[in-house]
Amino acid sequence: MNEASAWEIFRDAINAMKSGWEITERGIVGPEQQFSVVKLSMGDVMSKNDWRQKTSLALVAFFLLFLGTAFIRRQGVPGQFNRLVNEAWEAVNEGYYDPNFGGANWAAIRQEFVSGNYGAREEAQTAIRQMLARLNSPATRFLTKEQVAAFLNEVSARPHIGTGLLELLVVDVEEQSRKLQIVTTIPNTPARRAGLQPGDWIFAIDGFKTDALGLTEAMEKLRGPETTITRLTIQRLRKHFEVQLARQKIPAIERSVRAETRQWRGQRIGYIRLDLFLDTSVEQMREAVRKLEEDRVSGVLLDLRSNPGGDVRSSLQIAALFLGDVPLVNVNGREGLKPLRALGEQITKLPLNVLVNKGTASAGEVLAVALQSHQRGAIVGQTTYGKGLIHKAAQLSDGSMVLITSGSLQTLKGAEILGRGITPDVAVNPKTGRDVQWNKAADLLLRQRLNLSSTTNK
Image (cartoon, rainbow, N blue to C red; front, side, top):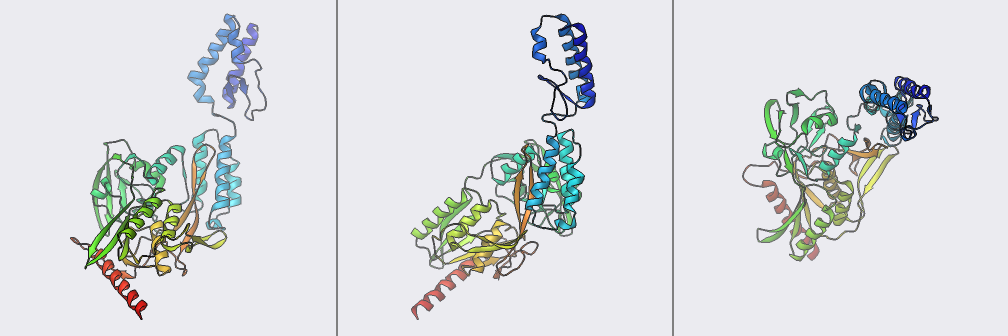
């Protein structure tokens, strides 16, 4: 290699950086990665004992180090960012519940966004967000790889740093008003201790109004390092007040099911508390039912108060323990109404009533209304939250994700759950000092058992 060819490497490197091409250890690669402008690799240059080659390589390295960021825009495999946008479009095209895409011309949107020339990951991500915004559906949204990890940690109840304001479970954007709302709170978290309640609006986060934020952007502001403080402005009915929450280590939820036998009016009543649906909840529920059967209880009160939902498959399996293989609710999706069925076999026929409140949401509502629909148990408490959408997660090739609304939930009688909730058979508002809802449900359970015995003896 002579001095002229060394300067050719230098010249080609500069031209490559200006053209948006990429310099690799294999040489300078064109945007379509079809050919190399420089056939001599950097390794070959270093193997030569010639100061001219080393000098030219040093010059190339200088421009890569100090000027490269100004010129080189393509990273990784050229065209991969366009592919990300196309993957997101395809996922929505196949999975979104509304075949009319909310009135958006989805085919034209593909032409508009997928044909773009995205030179950086951030540009493609911005395009995906803009594309999804055309659906006018806040529940259909994009998560980066880092946001996916934080989201999964929270919805799976893994250890994490936070305030107990878990994405989607505790905090969500209300579909009609598009406001950031508290669904419920989780026990032993700063949010629960601060007295936040179902239906509270998060009006501002650290002084930043949330009316222009989607859920993903709001969660970015709510998360942060341990011991730091977030200041929330809460709207409850017509009043505004501030709450300060310290971010702390939130331990994993090891047990989501608790059971005990209680004495009530001379009878043994089984009590099962289900905090949320996790993949470990099914076996814990099975154990709880077995224990109460062994204690020969007169019936069971299933407490779903402030249960925000969680793992869908677990909820279907738990429903089967009380109902067997039956339809629970209907899902109104792309192909019309389809039943969502329980998964598994029934293991108990003990009399049952269900406790709910304003914080019972999502999978908790599905279980409650299924038990009501099949006349397996009465619902006692307050009208539930009304969170009636089903989502599917489409993971993109770089580890990011699109959460897609794939259906809305209806009761077996055809009533929409979204925005309406489940109406209890016996309405009882909570009172300070005593659990009047539990007392009412227990009395009703004993009357049901008495009526059943009397009917059997006739």
